[in-house]
Length: 440
Image 1 (cartoon, rainbow, N blue to C red):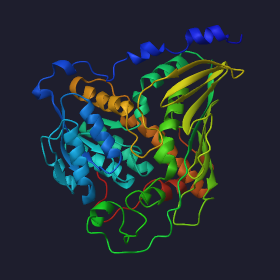
Image 2 (image 1 turned 30 degrees about the vertical axis):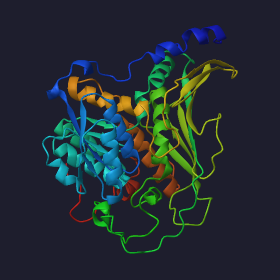
Image 3 (image 1 turned 45 degrees about the horizontal axis):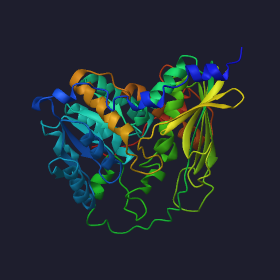
Image 4 (image 1 turned 45 degrees about the vertical axis):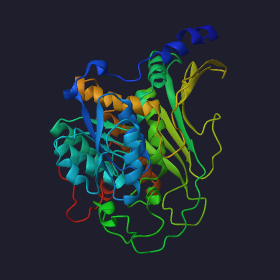
């Protein structure tokens, strides 16, 4: 029997007033906390996303930013002023994060650095007894994800991955409605991202700028000469340090799709695309279509880095398809449709959440930090513990491998590992600079 319009409306989302009244943060004792409950943060990487960290830490009561860290001197003053403007004291500045790990007053390390640093920094922080807020992707390669999970279990501290839509009130609600049968049996989800990035040109070897510690910037990555088109952002498009648009942005929407479909590691992965715009140093695709196949279900991701044409009038989002209807959800709200495509319910959050910029700040990030703080103070369950977040990261890293090798990947669905031993040997991990090898 087909679902009627009235049934959709009855079973669909909470009213706007109810969602608007939902608490901003997941913990409940912030009004009575004492000085002993203050949570001290050190923010690592403060050029862009790190500023959102500063904003969100300050948005949660009884917190303090004690340190900020970056290997580029240019960002110290602006980040310090932002922390002060948000009601805090001037934080200490460090270039070398290892000095911060020695400070026993620091409770949480937040990481918004280039991606080759994510897992090594997080593991080092856990070993130093710190909790971690870790931006996506949580690892540069699949092996690092395994090591990070192992470290979290060994040292017992919290690791919240920065897929902040897991802390969105309206996304939590509509996913629950989907799980409760709002659109029947769900079987397909599509995620997408469209942008208009320009060329990164052809880099030239030049002297390292005086404001940058290039040696420390490279850290665990094998050494390369400094080129003028890598720092501070274009490292995303080099295999040596980055993971391409898939891990840069698909992480969010594909994770929502996997959450809504209630699936884990896929059975197979295929990826097709290429570098169709510009002749430059960009090593990844600028256009990619990836399929993640399950037993009776499928997720696809379509990424366009250099053409901003939208899908469903959105630059990014997730479409969830069921036997009785569909849902489109993004950072701003959702739409519920019947099987014939008639829109029967719409919700707009009215909140400020940056969707297409590099900072990506807003209330969802505030809540995501609040959820971590609640875990630290009261044991509140994390919305994105690293063991769960890593499933989405692993399948996306493998989609890069599927594209690079032009292979259909078959996976062990229990572990997320590739069944092909030669692919495992060649692509599962990476080489490290001597002295920077990861150890748990």
